View 1 (cartoon, rainbow, N blue to C red):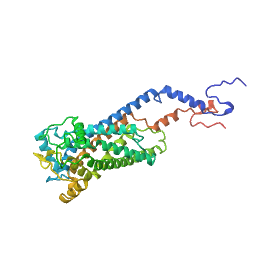
View 2 (cartoon, helix red, strand yellow; view 1 turned 180 degrees about the vertical axis):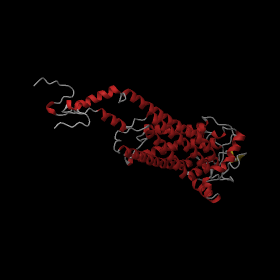
View 3 (cartoon, rainbow, N blue to C red; view 1 turned 60 degrees about the horizontal axis):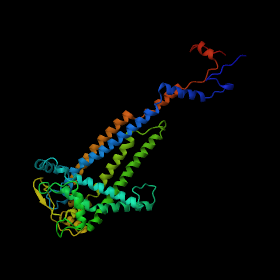
View 4 (cartoon, one colour; view 1 turned 90 degrees about the vertical axis):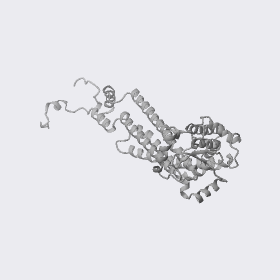
Length: 406
């Protein structure tokens, strides 16, 4: 009989309660540094987010800069209706590229890039304004109703209707030769687009197709491009998210945190896949629409056959279907794919940029990624104290091979 001293590891009535050891374990983890401080963890998350968004933005911006020379070549080939070379592969474009660079300088293939960004800004602004004054949603999800889908499609269509005259002005700035015309300014796209709508300042030519006849083909092309790219984008994102969920469902991976690679790279890959599929599928339709845009504008383009000299564009299409029939009758199926090699070259450059972004995200995941989960669990288990021995004196008195008392 004596006074019993209670401590942190004393258990009433001989019962073992793990509550106190767990609390002590938490204190030891904080003292020993097994858990990262919340402040440091939040700082790492902010760094990951900023770096991830920066890499994604730089990737998209560089794609626009690198793809624009390919777009210039592609569009010039598309509207060059009587060209001897169709340029269905990138190899036939090498001579043209070299001659253009030698005779007109290194910046000739970046002409009209300011107008491209102006048109994108007009499209975004028009959609924002329409969404503000109407109940049409700017974005929809798979949980949206059919009515919301219809309103969203109507919003996109109205935005393309407003942007149609500026598409035509931007195309002319992109394909016209620097030798035979003045270099346009950034705001010239706005002026030419407004002039095309009002009928002011446009060349007096009976072959010029009115803007209202270009609205239908433009909206059809842009909406089709949007549908195809959106479906491909959703498919890629869904498959990537399913793979990530399957990895989290594996034993020991329940608390797995997404790395910057898993968070941001699927979005870039989905965008690349959607744009690639839409551009390849709709290439013939784009050729027809671009020829309608440029008809009657007296535009002079570079000679895409050899890259030397200039060629005037003179066609007599009556509309979309007449242009389609004329291309098929005079040039054959390959006539719809003039300049297709430039599109292949463009996405080869995109693939290289995407590969670089993937390597950067993987390096970022290694630097700022979460520690391995299993190692942390083993460390926590090794720190958990065992229940007190019923023979405290015997635990130290007897050796490993000593016989136990009966």
